[in-house]
Image (cartoon, rainbow, N blue to C red; front, side, top):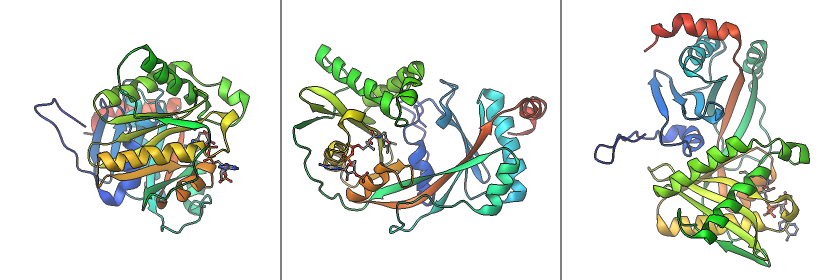
Length: 310
Ligand SMILES: CC(C)(COP(=O)(O)OP(=O)(O)OC[C@H]1O[C@@H](n2cnc3c(N)ncnc32)[C@H](O)[C@@H]1OP(=O)(O)O)[C@@H](O)C(=O)NCCC(=O)NCCS
């Protein structure tokens, strides 16, 4: 969170909650963060469907008998200002040798969440231990970091970065077709805005001059640098392009910012989870997300209760 250049507001990161800090590193600079006893509420007002920006980050896993209170908080304080979801997150420490498989949620908590209509999903946060080399990807040119602004050729490179994001979710044509262009354009604008203020560095991989892969390094301004938006075009996967791209981007980051901590968020057990370990990143936390869409009853509660919380 920043004030004006003359009057910065510095929010210190709590290192015991680094998993949650990693998930928040790439939020737009205009983000509303409210600190409560036991939690931080995060709201990105500029884009209501940017769900990552609408969340209650808890300091610890919620106790079953506290769930209704936290859900009420989400409805009161986030829904009241436009968030479409009730969304709670918390982290659990993971040992560095934890295997790349999805962990099981606490059964009593999962059952209590299910009874309230909420699913719970894990993400694994990994931190760089020592950067390991990976085999070079033959016939691939790695470019970066891209300057934020420049001539038409540079503009085309940024366009390549944006187009590749279409393939970031899922592995089927239906999922790629369902990509929301409006959201994509907004998110790309946020990333490019972060590049202009020196907080994001985008990279491209080219094969025969054609953009086939991209990654962006985003730092949170306190020495934590997060690997974001790693995507390889589906037709070019399984050739080591992601590994070569990420290796180059991390090596440049460490050279430019010695001592930076490098982190990434993956779906446990995914191709990316395995790739991160080959590159020398080690698990540090599981971040659990429990969510459901808001319903009318939540909004009634929010409307009637909004004044009661500070
Ligand atoms: C994850 C992703 C970026 C990986 O891209 P990629 O270029 O295919 O990655 P790599 O080629 O380095 O590795 C992919 C697999 O190919 C294998 N591979 C790499 N080089 C190879 C080669 N020369 N010959 C045969 N196999 C090879 C790797 O071992 C890996 O196998 P694994 O899944 O069994 O571990 C890509 O699948 C993607 O864009 N997915 C959607 C977005 C996403 O999930 N991003 C990650 C967010 S953190």
